[in-house]
Image 1: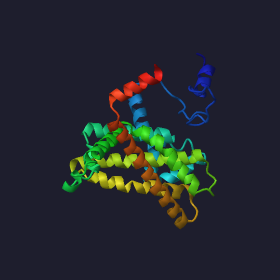
Image 2: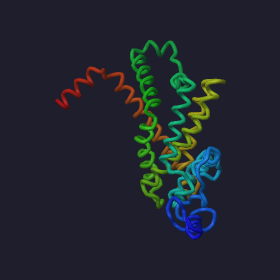
Image 3: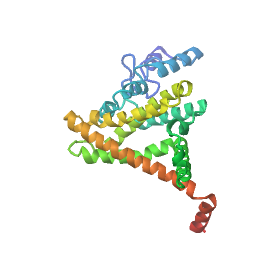
Image 4: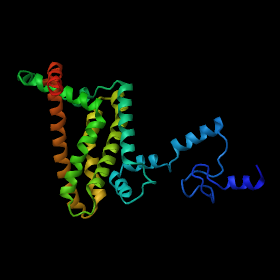
Length: 272
């Protein structure tokens, strides 16, 4: 390789092939002057990506812990490189939540369900209700991401209806819901080790506090008169969590009411 060829190679990005001026490529962001891979270089690159406070995922996580609505607003306004993609963020948050629950063997049902008193056990409906609650929480644990994605459009629709004067569209409200859900999931995950080691009911109280994320999200995202926005957000959260409870409990009730034989018979009748 001639001296001129080496000079061209040194000024050309090895990822996109564009000319490089300065430390980073202006087209793809890769650092200029990349060298052959070594064990030390690979290790330091990994540490840079994981612990770099300027990395989009770290920046998104830190900011979402106290202002998820603001993060959603910045992302909707075009800061797509500064903050992590909302669905990537919530996927990682839910995956971490499931991982921590399974590693610690944490019993969500025991943490959130109030034990029935003696008078309640005499009610003939209580065994069915109790079994349905077990099933709904088990479903929530196994299909947390599914429920999040299914129910978030309801949250977005409610915000859209009450904050109708704002300029945001439905998809942008979905983005808000995804960031809020991811932030709430992360905080819930952080509470699990403390609940497992200190007091299991810590998880329940933290879960109640997570309503605040769904409350402040629209306020931070939409802005305007704080008092009016807070009232509207209260209505959104109240309706949303009632509908969410009905939906999840209904799914649990269906699971305990329908036998595997019935499901097999329905499938047989539909397809055959």
